[in-house]
Length: 314
Image (tube, rainbow, N blue to C red; front, side, top):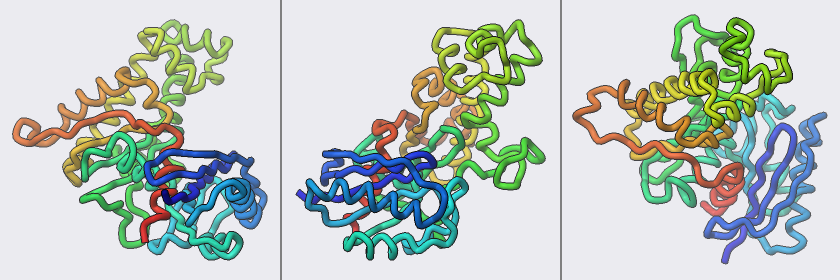
């Protein structure tokens, strides 16, 4: 049984795990992400991996990084929330750990994890859409992870959906994640509660009377409790999600779309209107097989498991 270590580098924590060739996590280690410098982040990764190597004989390490990774799975070109810019992470970590290292974008790693061991294990063509604070994802076609010429494929969140729409942190306007993400849900919930307090009464109550304090989990809780306003907000987000998936289907024709991220915990409250919107928007829907839309199975562990598996691939 070959063991590898997967490392998921987040903005607040670095999660590492020993993973076997069946996708099972045997032991985990977590350290806070030191964000002062790139070197500090690298030292945090080494610390998390070193803890696990004391009890396990591992053959390689995979690192899932939240940003652009080059086509060689070596250099982290840019991370929006960490001080990694054109950083040769594979070389640095390989030398520090004396092990082979693979670096991959975190959403790509999660897509591979779901494909190999989660919701996509029975297909060869699938797309992962992660709906969390932002919107991301990964693509597997013909059993291979699609990375693009420069390693930056699958940036779903920054496809333009609305000309001159809401401004996005990437510098453009109208990006998909401005309508389908936790940030978008909170923005619309606060706007509703401020402009129509009678409709947003339940949300205002959960926020202690302050519409500006409404959070994504509050909207989810209210929706699960059957609050009409919260259900409407989730339904609007789901419509954007379904219509966007219809565009993805026209481009890639996958057999399956797996929806991950924090908002997938809403289950059918999110997926039912998503599927309806997808069917309504899909081009020539009556004349083509329709893909399946389902929720992710591996949760927050998908990236760690996926990148550990990618570390085994020559």
